[in-house]
Image 1 (tube, rainbow, N blue to C red):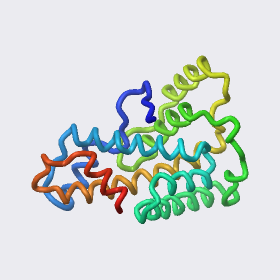
Image 2 (image 1 turned 135 degrees about the vertical axis):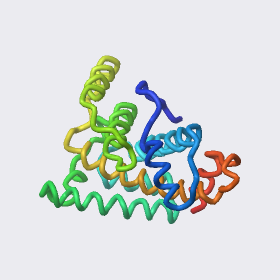
Image 3 (image 1 turned 45 degrees about the vertical axis):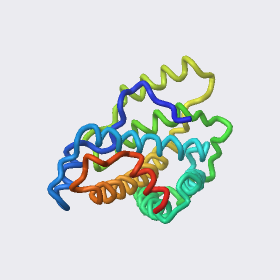
Length: 202
């Protein structure tokens, strides 16, 4: 079951970015309720990938994505993520796939990983307008440590996982906007259920 966080509504794409993307294709302004629904959908998608993978290693995230969305759309999102991951290995000069050699399955805490990766993906998203928030991450660490005897997500796995998952969410967001435009000019008929159904069929 999808679990919410204590950090408020998710924001992977800002209102400004949404309007810019849509206006480049068709003069449509997205309503706040619709934008919130899209962000919640992406949030749930992130949670479901982590729930399926039970790990932050990229090879298990890959399997988790294909388990949640075993469609052409899922494979296309995976390709985007692999490109970002290769660029990360090149920038950091770490051996490609080195994070996959680490095993965090015994220490993986789904809620902790989800809330931390939400913060990271919101900050890494090129469609959003926020930066990393060390204070929020520190509060999360303190809160989770007080209610759980488990260790936090491994720092060496967090950065590549966050970049990988952000690329997936951005690819999903692009698809959502293409689907959204298919409802124009009857945008008032748009529901998040319509988008989710199309994602599963794509």
